[in-house]
Amino acid sequence: MEIKESKHESIIAKIIYSTLIELYGINGYKSIIDIMTKECGKNEQDIITNYNLFEEMVEVIFGKTGTNKILEPIKYQISKLNEKEIVTEMKRFYKHDKMRLLIAEDDPRILELYRDWLKMAHHDVITATDGQKCLNIYKKEYEFARINNLKKCFDVVILDHIMPNMTGVETASEILKINPNQRIIFASGHVRKILLESVSRINKVIEIIEKPFLIESLDDMINKNTLWRKFDEINSNQNIKTPLEKYSKALNIISQMHHK
Image (cartoon, rainbow, N blue to C red):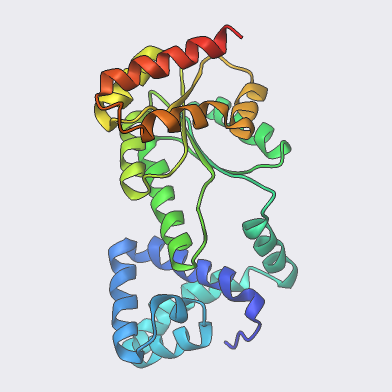
């Protein structure tokens, strides 16, 4: 299966990466790539962005088993994309005037409302129905961005406070371990509680939009960055050392903004 066009490299790489993760998990993916890098002397990005090299390595290293269990599922995914779909997907993935959003919300009706409205507002939206699924998506997208030298995987992650499997704060904590610079917005009806919980657990104040809210208000918060910039000043200020100090200053900022 020969793939020559360089403009297809990134989307093919994404298919290879996603398919192997689905089949064998992140550790399985890394094991396969590690064996290939040792065999051919190329790095991870060189291998997954060059399908012909990837195919050759699978056949040489894993033989018929590799062809059946690695190449065939990947070929199937590639075969579902025609020329127009590949180009469209690449434009979507690299379109600079779109913000990429990851939203976790356990109520499917609210999640659908978020997704549909924010897509109409020209954002690129990926959704998850609980904290653990959100974290899994984030890990997958972050790793792909890292491999392909992309600046970021998501512009904003929006987390419901109360969700199954992992709460919003628990999910935020794990995401920030992966990427300390990730911008996160909590959606909660308990502003003081989640603010205190976040500074206590993460030692960082994180943006909050109070439920119930208009979707226009969420979009406005995403685009204007006002609260994010003010909170970033608190988080980066070395003179503000304790979680309680951060909590008090953040609460004061929220109060001032509400009274404007």
